[in-house]
Length: 141
Image (tube, rainbow, N blue to C red; front, side, top):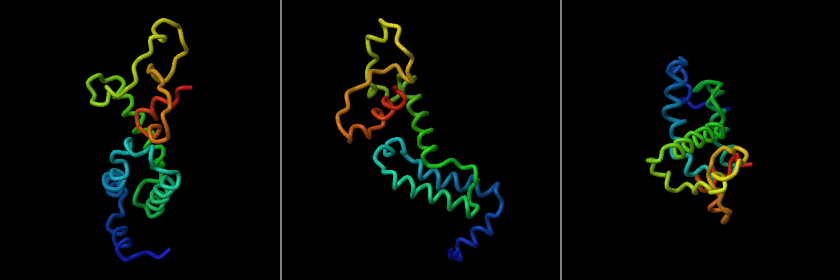
């Protein structure tokens, strides 16, 4: 692999892990994760592999910790956290977009699910990529 002069200089100047990890996480990872919940359903597996390849190169070059999660793990964690906040905070701006709580769950002793929302009918691949639809269908069976 051919190293450019700038990369080698940056690696020499940022040789301490205490400087590299926060800098890489605050710049590169923050840019990757910006609004990831909105666009996560629309990217392909090839795009995910490209981002993971970038993160692996950064680990190999020493710009970040080897324990850094994969892109899919980071995005799924962010999605789960946001969905939790939307479900349990009735004042959240996206709370109105959640499907209603079904009446059957109030009258019957049903098995527990990851959420207590009604599962809507699938309308197509575009709506299936929507954040709310993806999260309602994830872990529902």
